[in-house]
Length: 414
View (cartoon, rainbow, N blue to C red):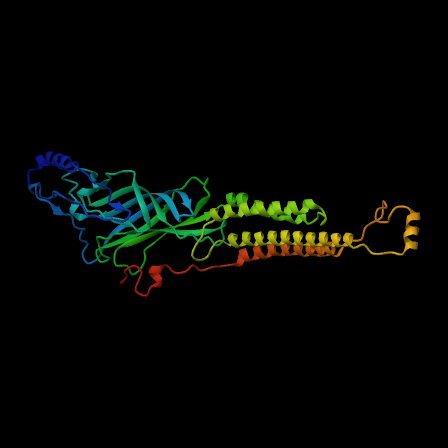
């Protein structure tokens, strides 16, 4: 050991050496790499600086090294149900003890040292569901205490896949997982203890975070921890853009049944409603997500509305055509009457059908249209209550993922 008087100078040289050169972040979306740098020992300052060695995980005896992880979720945005992706901003605080970095505080009165992340061992993490990861700090630095306690902060923005449960869209709730794996270590070497903190202060989102949980998946080959974001849809946008126009068209169609059957405007009115709803339905199909299982109930609901409008329009056109054909037959083949009755009618003046104030008798087509209108209104009202009840009580279990459905598939487990 060198004399005590040279300790401050050697400590400054050590700090200057450690600040030379950094590389990329240690947590990646899909890949992993382990840094290899020269690390001079605190207890042997005479070690040549040209000798480089692979930094090994700290030895914790027979027990695995415990790494405490705190996940601070600051924002969740860009929830895209069509692409099944969600973007989030996280801050990770990793803490562990590396006794190789400890020093005698009485000889070296330093409260803490700030070291580059690639100058000491750090757990390399991989986010399984990540499509991309963007780091706010490309060269994070770790804080080391006299007892070897290491704190490392990592701020990131990532876009991950999420299996949304959209059966009750737009009042859907989904759990989105972020699984962090340390692929360079085994469960015998490393163990995570994770905690999550919800620091989201903005609620002006279509999807809001109502729950935040962490867990350690059991029986894994490599150390891992999982963060679960529980998202809930506020539904305001979908109600205004989808449900209100659909109900308005259905109500307008029922009101169209109050027009007389012989009025030519009724057919034009019904056809216009049907064509308008077809345009609305085509844009609706593009706006709603689709899935291999448990599709949104709104898809079936708006399809039923389309069928109701189609049936109502076809009924109007069919009965109007039959009524018009009946009038044509009546005009082309008038009922013969005796001459005496014709003379009597001629003496009385105008024909009863043309006399003012005389009410014409309703045809069978108009009676059938009235009956259909009553049945149609009752059917529409009952269908609305049926859909509300089905919406509240319906459940659906999604099909298992291909990796879990295959007997020999899935993630490696012990």
